[in-house]
Image (tube, rainbow, N blue to C red; front, side, top):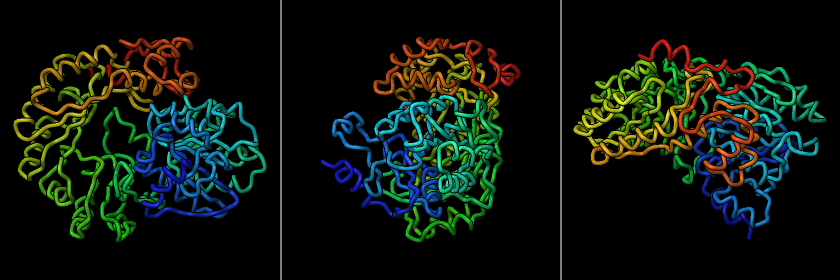
Length: 511
């Protein structure tokens, strides 16, 4: 039974915009998660188009099978989507990675593609392994044992340089010579510190979808990037640093790249209600009968006009972020959202007939205490008195390149205790969806770790569990208490801030 014919070919047949090309230089663009997740990644699609637009380069996609164990039992090589060729049979095996918890999937992806996961075990006969995406901007160091090339920042300027090097290089070292020193290029075999990030000029934007498919997490949606970067100063978020300076695209620029056949369009950006052309673009599309999606709306900038446009675009539930359980902590994060803003948004959503309001937030913040959780419970009850409420709650994970990097993780026991209290007091008031505190702890370890964390992941990637992570970290001597972490005991990789119990930002604002 052919995995490609039975599993991938039906997905391929339902795609619009697929690129088919034969060329001397073969690139596999892999996503270390299932097809539906990868095809919802705008960056993944942009890189796919860029490689295929390069002379002499042909790029095909590959995804991690939904059931990797079952796939391995078939005894077949991992196929590419476009032609079913062996994914590992290429000159460049490139991966786009979005999430810390995909670290073990990166290793598994290389394994099932027939490429040894460890860089030191490969030679010139193997494909060059290149890894990029949001994870590399956040923390590239756990990828050092696996990647030949780590791309940090925007890919728009890097892909032509990499393609040119692939055409000219006669060996792996020759390839390294041709790209060494380029902004955004981190070569683990040569470098110990991450480089200056690559930042695409406005002229190379906007980013937009290449392929639309009903089997994406964003089913049949054509994505277009309204803005890159963010004008807001929220201290917990990587958008300002990871995506460089804020670059707004023009409203007509966005409309010009949206094909006439697109029936659903998603506007992508860190703060779309700040984007000056959201209403113009949204109104133009909805008047054509196009369904509209947006990636982020701020409660302090919501008004009835914007909400009406989103309603006309088919939005049924209004979604905003509180990002902290109390107004005191929102000020600490420089979020700029008040409880009054959230109440106003709930009222607008009710008056315009939205079926409910979804509010995202984090708990486990540095100076958080029981009073903050009490406030969360109280204002959620106020919101629920206006419209149906769903709360999406995630444990706070400190990230590099933010003022909070050296803040300790809140601790599994503390976070679980607060989640239980929230569930007990709000179970009849709001729909509650929360992220596991234990897996958030693993995410925090990967977000702060170095190559040794990558090697720990290598020991457990076939049988990943919380217990396996605790054992692997203990074996490498990683000191990071499971229940209540102390950031001052963490050994930080090169290029990171020195360890301290709480960040300077936290010291100044934790009141």
